[in-house]
Length: 430
Image (cartoon, rainbow, N blue to C red; front, side):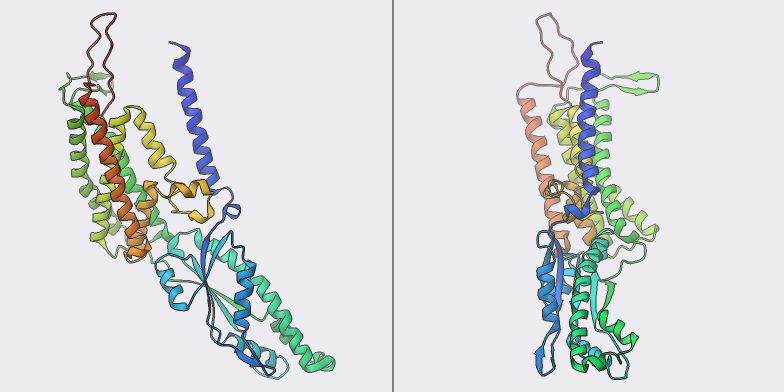
């Protein structure tokens, strides 16, 4: 026993704990402060009207006020037409939309006239559409942004409408305006908050896409760990313990590259079976799956990509590969997945990880298949291509590392040194 026996594990665990705290606590600690580039569509369909002999378009004025008032560094406000807004909502490219209808100015003018002339009063409407299929936390952020922005609009429009009504009827007429009319003038706009394409039954408010992503990634990640241990045991490279019993057959002398290929073959054979188990379980639990074949095929690809890469990391770095895989697939993956809190509401250093993190790519594809009708624009195309790129990178790493080790004669052996001057051959696991 040496001091290093105790200090090395403690130091490693301390660094690991610091990384966990930085990623997970920073991930959800202050979404309002971290908000950036949150995409929202703004649609002005208002045709305008003639008020007091002057052509007026209140919708255009509100649009300009929202563009000027909503912080550009926090919200990506896109002024678009209704068709473009719907397309971006359907593809998950915007997280909500604020829609001003075509009769907005006309209804506001009628509201002002009805306050002094007996008749029904109907307030003009602005619709706030959230996009719940993006994620369960996104709709709440969208509502808060819209509430704050439209509260100022409500106050400004109400004041302008009240001034115009009082100027029209004069001081004596103002006294005749009823209390109900005064309330309607002060709060002239009816804000309607509705979801765009509500979540289907059985979708768990969108969390089902996240958990399906998680089981695919864990199947590849933990599957690689299990296969790595069992194959190395069968080939005699590592001992196996069954309770108090210890088994260590003689090493077969299989090359590192061939050992890796055997492990890849096992995860490749298991992947379609595991994907089918996940799909069948989802159907039995009543989870809506509109494209089962596509989900099965992509699930198989994702498990193979994660499994191949995890096995390659183990073959390259040996025991240290266990920690590398844990950090790569889990510690960095969960906060940057965008499965609960959107990337636009997390610190930028976490959002940057989503460019390459496997969990985010898998989540985009799974969410597109389960909640966005398998649309390529909704993340399926990016998820597939990035998964294939990850598979290629992982396979290249594994082949290059194991071939190099074999070529240099760094064979896996448990033979003891034959003399005091002899050196032990490095025994990196594969």
